[in-house]
Image 1 (cartoon, rainbow, N blue to C red):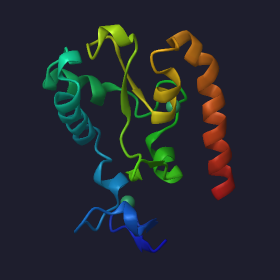
Image 2 (spheres, protein in one colour):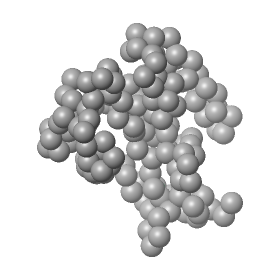
Image 3 (cartoon, rainbow, N blue to C red):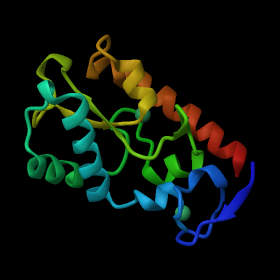
Image 4 (cartoon, rainbow, N blue to C red):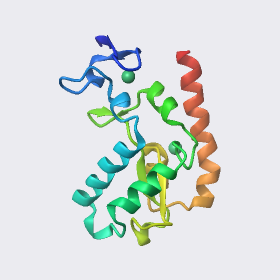
Length: 150
Ligand SMILES: [Zn+2]
Ligand SMILES: [Zn+2]
Protein backbone atom coordinates (compact mmCIF):
# COMPACT_ATOMS: atom_id res chain seq x y z
CA UNK A 1 0.00 0.00 0.00
CA UNK A 2 1.33 3.42 -1.02
CA UNK A 3 1.44 5.95 1.76
CA UNK A 4 1.19 9.69 1.66
CA UNK A 5 1.76 12.37 4.26
CA UNK A 6 -1.47 13.93 5.45
CA UNK A 7 -1.30 17.71 5.05
CA UNK A 8 -3.24 18.17 8.27
CA UNK A 9 -1.98 15.62 10.84
CA UNK A 10 1.36 14.90 9.16
CA UNK A 11 0.93 11.12 9.53
CA UNK A 12 2.09 8.77 6.82
CA UNK A 13 -1.28 7.43 5.78
CA UNK A 14 -2.37 4.80 3.22
CA UNK A 15 -3.20 6.36 -0.14
CA UNK A 16 -6.74 4.93 -0.04
CA UNK A 17 -7.51 6.96 3.11
CA UNK A 18 -7.63 10.19 1.11
CA UNK A 19 -10.77 11.19 -0.74
CA UNK A 20 -10.31 12.42 -4.28
CA UNK A 21 -8.60 15.78 -4.42
CA UNK A 22 -8.09 15.98 -0.63
CA UNK A 23 -4.75 16.72 0.98
CA UNK A 24 -5.98 15.63 4.43
CA UNK A 25 -6.77 12.05 5.45
CA UNK A 26 -10.38 10.90 6.03
CA UNK A 27 -9.94 11.02 9.82
CA UNK A 28 -8.77 14.64 9.69
CA UNK A 29 -11.55 15.41 7.25
CA UNK A 30 -14.09 14.17 9.80
CA UNK A 31 -12.31 15.16 13.00
CA UNK A 32 -14.89 17.86 13.71
CA UNK A 33 -17.75 16.29 15.69
CA UNK A 34 -20.35 18.64 14.27
CA UNK A 35 -19.39 17.65 10.76
CA UNK A 36 -19.67 13.95 11.68
CA UNK A 37 -23.00 14.55 13.38
CA UNK A 38 -24.45 16.25 10.31
CA UNK A 39 -23.19 13.52 7.99
CA UNK A 40 -24.67 10.82 10.25
CA UNK A 41 -27.99 12.57 10.43
CA UNK A 42 -28.10 12.76 6.62
CA UNK A 43 -27.36 8.99 6.49
CA UNK A 44 -30.24 8.25 8.82
CA UNK A 45 -32.60 10.50 6.91
CA UNK A 46 -31.78 8.48 3.84
CA UNK A 47 -31.63 5.00 5.30
CA UNK A 48 -33.72 4.98 8.49
CA UNK A 49 -36.33 7.68 8.09
CA UNK A 50 -39.16 5.71 9.76
CA UNK A 51 -37.02 5.11 12.86
CA UNK A 52 -35.79 8.70 13.10
CA UNK A 53 -37.65 10.50 15.91
CA UNK A 54 -35.30 13.42 16.41
CA UNK A 55 -34.69 16.65 14.50
CA UNK A 56 -31.37 17.63 12.96
CA UNK A 57 -30.49 20.42 15.40
CA UNK A 58 -31.38 18.28 18.41
CA UNK A 59 -29.34 15.40 17.04
CA UNK A 60 -26.28 17.56 16.29
CA UNK A 61 -26.38 19.15 19.73
CA UNK A 62 -26.73 15.72 21.40
CA UNK A 63 -23.81 14.34 19.35
CA UNK A 64 -21.44 17.23 20.02
CA UNK A 65 -22.19 17.00 23.77
CA UNK A 66 -20.95 13.42 23.90
CA UNK A 67 -17.49 12.32 24.87
CA UNK A 68 -15.75 11.49 21.58
CA UNK A 69 -15.51 7.76 22.21
CA UNK A 70 -17.42 4.49 21.90
CA UNK A 71 -20.00 4.36 24.71
CA UNK A 72 -19.43 0.61 25.12
CA UNK A 73 -15.71 -0.12 24.81
CA UNK A 74 -14.33 3.40 25.35
CA UNK A 75 -12.28 3.51 22.14
CA UNK A 76 -11.44 7.18 21.50
CA UNK A 77 -11.47 8.98 18.17
CA UNK A 78 -7.68 9.35 18.16
CA UNK A 79 -7.33 5.60 18.83
CA UNK A 80 -9.84 4.88 16.08
CA UNK A 81 -7.69 6.95 13.71
CA UNK A 82 -4.55 5.12 14.78
CA UNK A 83 -6.14 1.68 14.31
CA UNK A 84 -7.22 2.47 10.73
CA UNK A 85 -10.02 -0.08 10.92
CA UNK A 86 -11.40 -1.19 7.60
CA UNK A 87 -15.13 -1.22 7.17
CA UNK A 88 -16.49 -2.39 3.86
CA UNK A 89 -14.51 -0.77 1.05
CA UNK A 90 -13.29 2.11 3.15
CA UNK A 91 -12.15 2.94 6.66
CA UNK A 92 -14.17 3.35 9.81
CA UNK A 93 -14.02 7.11 10.39
CA UNK A 94 -17.24 8.04 12.17
CA UNK A 95 -19.12 6.50 15.12
CA UNK A 96 -22.20 4.43 14.53
CA UNK A 97 -25.34 5.63 16.27
CA UNK A 98 -26.63 2.86 18.48
CA UNK A 99 -30.27 2.78 19.56
CA UNK A 100 -29.94 1.75 23.20
CA UNK A 101 -33.34 0.07 23.00
CA UNK A 102 -33.73 -0.87 19.33
CA UNK A 103 -37.54 -0.70 19.44
CA UNK A 104 -37.50 2.96 20.40
CA UNK A 105 -35.47 3.96 17.35
CA UNK A 106 -33.44 7.17 17.02
CA UNK A 107 -34.87 9.29 19.82
CA UNK A 108 -33.29 11.55 22.40
CA UNK A 109 -32.38 9.51 25.49
CA UNK A 110 -32.03 6.35 23.41
CA UNK A 111 -28.82 7.11 21.52
CA UNK A 112 -25.20 6.11 22.00
CA UNK A 113 -22.05 6.70 19.98
CA UNK A 114 -20.57 3.32 19.21
CA UNK A 115 -17.73 1.74 17.30
CA UNK A 116 -19.02 -0.63 14.63
CA UNK A 117 -17.66 -3.69 16.40
CA UNK A 118 -19.62 -2.92 19.61
CA UNK A 119 -22.64 -2.00 17.53
CA UNK A 120 -22.51 -5.32 15.69
CA UNK A 121 -21.96 -7.25 18.91
CA UNK A 122 -24.92 -5.56 20.57
CA UNK A 123 -27.27 -5.62 17.60
CA UNK A 124 -30.78 -6.38 18.77
CA UNK A 125 -29.53 -9.14 21.02
CA UNK A 126 -27.64 -7.62 23.95
CA UNK A 127 -28.59 -5.05 26.56
CA UNK A 128 -26.50 -2.11 27.77
CA UNK A 129 -25.84 -4.09 30.99
CA UNK A 130 -24.58 -7.05 28.98
CA UNK A 131 -22.39 -4.74 26.90
CA UNK A 132 -20.59 -3.77 30.13
CA UNK A 133 -19.18 -7.31 30.13
CA UNK A 134 -18.15 -7.25 26.47
CA UNK A 135 -17.00 -3.63 26.14
CA UNK A 136 -13.82 -4.02 28.23
CA UNK A 137 -12.86 -7.18 26.30
CA UNK A 138 -13.22 -5.34 22.99
CA UNK A 139 -11.13 -2.46 24.36
CA UNK A 140 -8.45 -4.98 25.32
CA UNK A 141 -8.33 -6.09 21.68
CA UNK A 142 -7.96 -2.48 20.49
CA UNK A 143 -5.20 -1.76 23.00
CA UNK A 144 -3.36 -4.97 22.08
CA UNK A 145 -3.41 -3.89 18.43
CA UNK A 146 -2.28 -0.37 19.32
CA UNK A 147 0.59 -1.74 21.43
CA UNK A 148 1.64 -3.98 18.54
CA UNK A 149 1.91 -1.04 16.14
CA UNK A 150 3.73 1.30 18.53
ZN1 LIG B 1 -4.65 13.37 8.81
ZN1 LIG C 1 -16.72 -0.05 20.92
